Length: 177
Image (cartoon, rainbow, N blue to C red; front, side, top):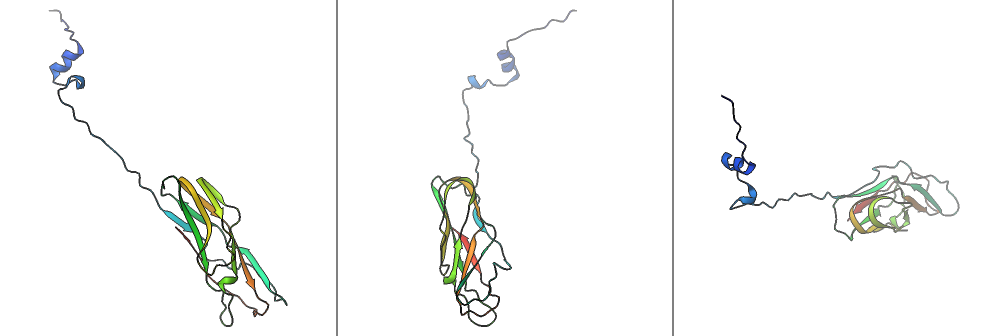
C-alpha cells in the first residue's frame, strides 16, 4: 500500500504537539534582567626607594640639589560619574642624617613635569615649593569614565650653606582622594 503524507499547517502541528504559540498565549511572563558592572578603585603608586636624587659639593652659599623621583601613577577605575575628579598629594619628612642638623620639609619642592594620560579628564600640575604639609601635586577634573595619569616629578632640596657634608634621607608620601 502506498504511503500517504499528510501535510498540516505549522500552527496545527505545533498545537498538536502541545507547544504553545507565544503570540496566541493567554498568559505571558516577562522577566526584567540586569547585570552589574562594579567600578574598580582609585590608587596611586610611586617608587619605594630612590638611592640618590643628586649630589652637590659644599659651597660658600646655599645650593639646591634636584633629581627625578621616578614614575608616579594614578589609576582610576571607579567608572566615576561624569564630572568627577581626584587630587594626588605629596608630603615630605625632614631629610636627616645619622647625627647633626636636618633639612626641613619646608626646603623640599616638587615639580610635576609632563603628565602622560589616558581617558577623559582635565589634569593640572600644582608644583608645590614646600612639602611641609599635604600639598596637591596633580588634580584631575571633568572626568568621564576610567582614566590614568603618570608623571616623573623632579624633587628640589634647598640646602643652606651651613649644612655639614653627609647623606641626608627623607620620605615623600603620595596619596590620592
